[in-house]
Image (cartoon, rainbow, N blue to C red; front, top):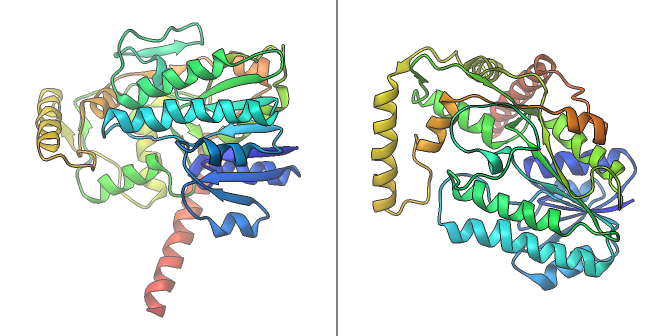
Length: 340
């Protein structure tokens, strides 16, 4: 099978690429950066931007299936940048994939596309898109997902996956952010909130994409549909955070901040960052505050049924793998310092 993976050098994209290679697939990566390690693995690496239709046309030539994992993530920045990458970029890729004769398209979405604010407990795919969104990322990913699902046809099968809070060994956004904040002594529990949340270990997230690809075909049960992906094992928010920090060798978060103070702090920081036109994300935002104080876990029965998805790596097994990765990183870092 010949597959194109957009964002093949990213955290999830790389995991998908490595999984496909292990199954004997021929893989082409399309990213903005250069990734020599992928080339050494036998991946054909093309550099380009999702805003470039010609580059996407070249990337899709000869491909049977497209995994679209590239996106502008995060919760801070101009709306037009999120829209350009996540919506226009996805539209460009759909056009290029169909023109090149690809028959299948697997899109990486996000559960944030249905977040209405407040607790989300055990929701399934019947949950509608909200009337308004709490971030440019969520809104543009929802728009992109709708484009992908609407493109499903008898000759071009599409599916959208919504993995929640992906983590694991490597330089991912979730773990890196938690460890950075913890080391900076800026991570605090908010009041007494410790609600259930879903997460997804990186290997399980990649496997979900392979499962979807293998089940996807015109007229199949998953064609034209979206699916929540997770461990299927919701845990209290701070329990998960402290497990991850423990794997990194950082102590658990015990200090607390009153909710009212946290909300005021987030508002002040967001205002200050906007006035200063800073491109970096504030230490605390209203979006992060909501995530830390609300439940968000999902029913993945549909993914189990239609995709054959099964979270093979448990949270505890993933934590052990993450701990070993951190140990290796420390050894490598110490070696670099010694050689310098």
